[in-house]
Image (cartoon, rainbow, N blue to C red; front, side, top):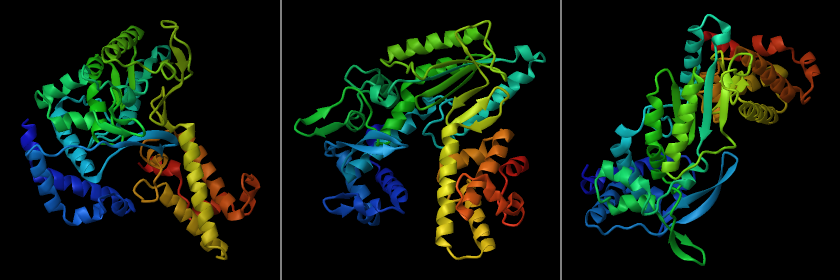
Length: 433
């Protein structure tokens, strides 16, 4: 790949400006993102001219990134540090990341599902459940129906990847982009930071989170491990970011895979998170393994916000269930408050309609990933029946203002919710699918 020629193409910069436009189209960030009092909205209106000027500056070797800064944000109920930079740098960072993505795409394992266009995060969940069902069908004797599962993640993965001069990362990038690396590629990964009272500095560990290059490198860096595990006969392997799962019916194979993981991580100067490592023996009753006492007997394995049972059914984990019910409750109560004074039938139908839309993965109201998981991958009928009841209780509590009181069903019968007001059943929806 001729990196310099690719970086000199104005179309790449124009497409990146349009991506930023689409991302912030319905937010105030379209006007808040500014450089020298020029907002992103203004740049969008002159995207062709801006793209041409940036491409020309890069082609002449005159463009350089300015030092950015670290900002702390809340993401998924956790405080995280992200790298923030000026607006033109944000555009160039995106172009560089897309170029690197093109160069490494063929080398990223098909068993890596994170941050990849065309691969849904739900896919490894359904594939693993299918793998377990297939394994069960191969054994008539229930005592032989067991699968060993290794769950691991890398300790502080994106913050631990070495990016100093001697990092293995540079050889990986040079093998795909050519040596020496273009300065903009190196500086997009090893960013300069403006530190208060300390001047400009560069990290020797940690990717610039918040910039698109971080997810590209995160997929690439564990490639050796991905290739080693994906080719094991009879095994299942999947990775999402730093969270990976390996399964096989033979304990020796899983133990060998664990040793391989430890060795490869050490060569990459990474370590696994021992607190989150799980060695499980998956069977419906959760019985222990006689062949590998170090594996804990379990009826299900937690994975990407779901619980996948030994029988191959999928349920939401407890956190996702609580999040889903809390969101539905808030929307039901808001609807009741907005329609204060409406007759009971009108109000009941309106609340049920809002709840139905909240649980529809195609609806704009289904913001929580819990709702999407629930409707697209959850197959555990027992959980769906329980959720049908809990959702009905949430609706009745909002309508009667009698929270956590099952006697509210005396005022609003369960049959009325389903038959007259149209509250949809999750079990029925799954059965239709």
